[in-house]
Structures are given as C-alpha cells and as structure tokens.
Length: 147
Image (cartoon, rainbow, N blue to C red; front, side):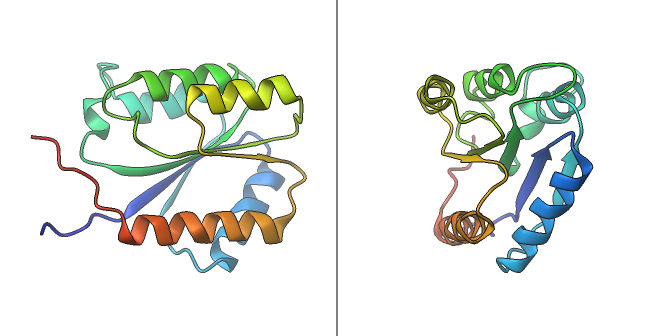
C-alpha cells in the first residue's frame, strides 16, 4: 500500500470574510489539512491545470475543492465544468458554497458533478458536519495511483 498523500483543500472564494469563516469552521471540524485560498477563478484554474493547462500538474495531488459560484472573473459553474471535464481533476470532490439557492442552479451543479451544494450564509454545524464526513471519507479513501 502506498503512503496516502494528504488532501489539499483548494478554496475558491472572493469574499475575505466568508473565506475566514469557512476556514474557521473547517478547523473547528477537526480538519487540519492545508488550505490553499484563491480569490478568483483564473488563479485557481492556473493552480489546478498548470502552466500548460493540461491538468497533469494535479495528477499526483489529492484535492478537495471548495467553490464559490459568484467570482469576479468567471462563473463558478464554468470552473466546476472545467474541473469535472479534466482527466486529472475530475475525481476531486467539489463542495459548492454560494449565496444562490436557485433550484435549477443547484441541479446544474449536481449534474456537472458537484459532491455537495451548500448555500451561504451556511448553517455552520451542517457545514462542519459535511466537511468532517468528507474528512472521514478522505482518510479511508484509496485514491488510485495514475500509472
């Protein structure tokens, strides 16, 4: 069995107050994984897909992506679509965190492969629970190594 790599939490959230609250609640849930924050989609996608845009840079990473849908430079749904369409990132769980509770938008996110959809302001106990369950999921999940 290979040594499990720690899961990196990629947080794409442009509101600093929300980002701090999310981080605080992740920590409160007992999750100590590294959080890599981005305030826009452009920088986040550059991190996820690398300079060449292929996504190969993420092939060895175990990622959990926290995604706000309302970003200054692009829509979160577009980012979700790109993440799930890329061979290297499509298995990464995505938690959508947004102020939008439009049922069509929620359905669209799930159709595109979002794992959890949480509306802000979130019920932080529920959020902490979801993160904790994902944490448990990660601690037991064997991510297949790519050849």
